[in-house]
Length: 166
Image 1 (cartoon, one colour):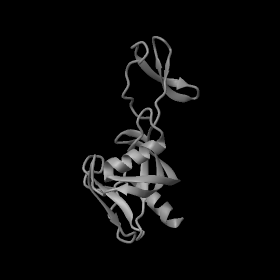
Image 2 (cartoon, one colour):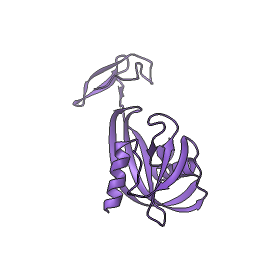
Image 3 (cartoon, helix red, strand yellow):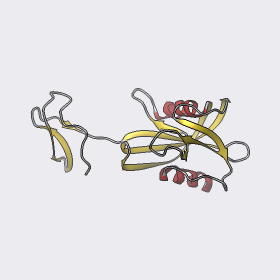
Image 4 (cartoon, one colour):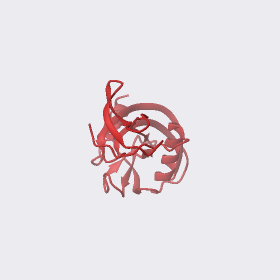
């Protein structure tokens, strides 16, 4: 059980205390009794192959994993579907537009840099745009599947393996 970032109730500003509620450790306001549910952050990753079967990767220019390669992706924003987030992240990080073909896999990362994260991986096909790094990507390019660089995130490695095995 990790330490919470939250100390006060968002409803009444009373102090939060971790206690067993509904058979799990949760934060409960000591003033109004409100339960503060802590949920993982939803995120997306994109698996894109070109006509040669190479996989699109981006080199991160921010932590976690600055300087290392990963799939394009990022967090789902409020008011956005996971599908919309996937298309937005693809465009922001690579300059490419695409259509989503299928969900490839999903994974959880517990107690990471951003706390608990759930990642949904989509396979996508490019429909337009020009390949250029953007947002938090320093570089974007395709790699042959037998020449992939060290991948920053274990979940992304898993997604690539799942795609290649299908």
